Image 1 (cartoon, rainbow, N blue to C red):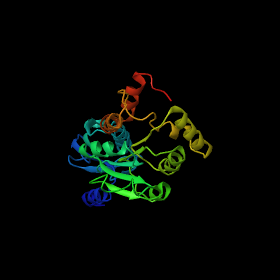
Image 2: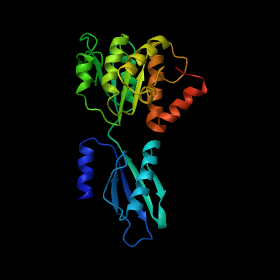
Image 3: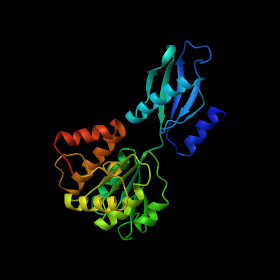
Length: 255
């Protein structure tokens, strides 16, 4: 395998991966500059020469993925590696094109997210309301079922009713994403999550949904709510979901 060809291929396919490069080594067979690709599930393409080194590398890469941060790490026998986390541009899917979606799409674009807006109402899902966004006017289930999700996909569910929330989450939670957030009152959110539990979704997966959505800044207006949501997206993107949850827990937010 030509590692450089593989790297280009993964980037073109918008795959997330860790590119591990040896910076220094006391092992003759592991020369400086040697590279391997590690995926977030621990799979490795390109070996460092031994099962033990590869296992160590997989563990270090998993840590880097969890922290969402490129870093230098020390392995055994004086092997030092640079773990470069390479991810496609973050994409944000807005399920719902109502009054909160407009400022949220605007803020998110300014912060480097590629934004897609989905709504089954063509008068709401209109390119004129969401400039520079991909706008899909279609049934939520149909639009999401064939949508390309990745570990760099962030999804905000802000539909007009709990039945649409459930339809969206049924499709979203089957796929791997960086973030899923659900807006709504505590009663509405509990109802939706209970529906999904009855459909077989595990409590572990359901607890990964950020709800109530957004960082707790006391937001009231659509613009303030959009700001709280996009702040949470940035926190997850830069610091990871654990840090975003820690900020929520600090003020006692619990569904």
